[in-house]
Length: 154
Image 1 (cartoon, rainbow, N blue to C red):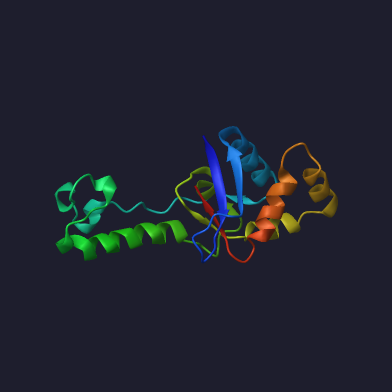
Image 2: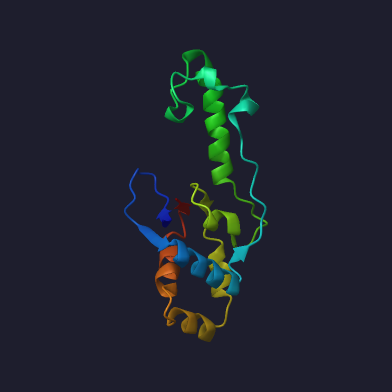
């Protein structure tokens, strides 16, 4: 099992992505931390259906199927939006990629703010990292391609 990073687009395509194994993600997180590109931020609250007054009885079938009874559709839509807001949340005061966004494949949105930390390093340090045995140059190129869109982590 690993993690897949997709550039966020308006279309429902997954054409530009970067994949790491579980071990590769650990290496990536280490590199990100060493370059000051990883932030220790607390994950935002995960909304639960019960917080919206929803119970398993409000669904036609298993909750995981998402077949909500019509009278609860609006409430369920609000719960789904709360989940999406959690995944999309960005704190402009946070510099770098929040650790939880890169470490967990829940669909979090990563903004390209970490590139500023990378580019602030001396050129020789960047060059050395890019020439290392790790796929660092590939990762940085991927971040640069996503600079205007952001990345989803699955």
